[in-house]
Image 1 (tube, one colour):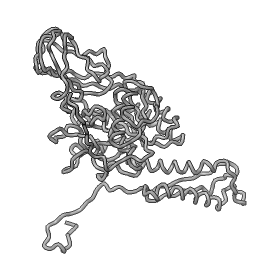
Image 2 (cartoon, rainbow, N blue to C red):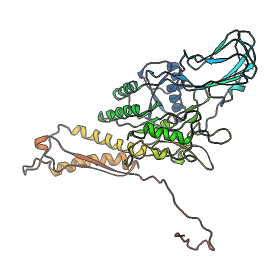
Image 3 (spheres, rainbow, N blue to C red):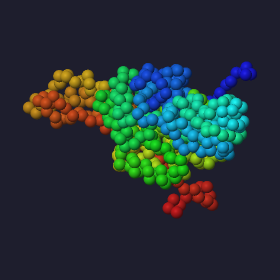
Image 4 (cartoon, one colour):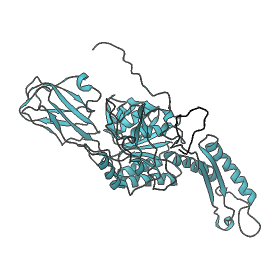
Length: 488
């Protein structure tokens, strides 16, 4: 080894740095570590030391490095085992390679093994190279060379024990085999357990990312968990993801499958991502295929609540690609293949003439016709709920004057005083910070509070408008000062 100083220069670090109190909770599986809510973590090495590897480590590490976030890891049990996709080979010899299904992978990877020196199985002299990301990071040509020795199998490091067996026979130089793995996953009960732990923890996390394919049952569990948090006074929204496209699945078939699987489901509290992306690992520096939620969840936690995640001013998603090395799309790009956005999924897109990947629209998976079209709408309402609850709780059990006309209704002057106090707080939180256009809190003047002890109230929030279409005209004219015929 040649002594050297190695420096990696990161891009896209100037535009977004997380607020000091921002904390992203991540629910996912991992190879090791404590189950449930752990202590907040700010260093990737602590993640690796505690959880070793797996989706939880990768998602948390991305949020730490790319957005400067503090993360709150929540490791779940994994009843749904990790698995293996189809094995493909090139230039075979007489030996037959098979995947050993008795071992369980701990992450979603694209394993490639390529032999540098061939030979006879169980005879010393053969060597090979490895890649865990389909060879995208170039490791097949630059990584270390491993010796097979007299073994008749390879256990791939960093995978949880993925193993390939070789039958008796020969393996030529250049022989290449590849297969994908799927990560272990929680079931709905395990997801619910993690959400209950998040609701009960005293750690003040701000946003939630759930790693694991959502079906209708899991989405209902997540929505119910977030509603339970709302009832407990903890207003939160989540970013999650549907399954990614299967190998060889067309855009049309994928859209139809998601429509069937999730078209009848809805949640005002969940932004449900669809499609997949290639995301640079903040642990290994490989480029793995990951759900968009890894990047979108971190971005959501890092920006102010009123920000539309699709705004170009904040730059492209760091370390994310949906095109191959030649710029051709090889993952879902909503600009090129629209349709998933109309189904309420949050998707990624490219922009003509701009390098990088952006959110297309920060959709909430709300019912069709809901006011909660975008994530920021929900987050602004969450602020209003939190402020109102904080200000109203001290009023509980307080004696208040009522009208003397026998109706038992609150005295108007008392109501005005309460309204003035809470409107001031709401205005400071929402209007003063330019998070909404207007806000108003009002108490009921018609409830018989004297006899029932109850009084109604409401908060109305006018959100910011978000420009989603700019229509204009360009024309050739005889004079720059001549009016343009806008009806033409």
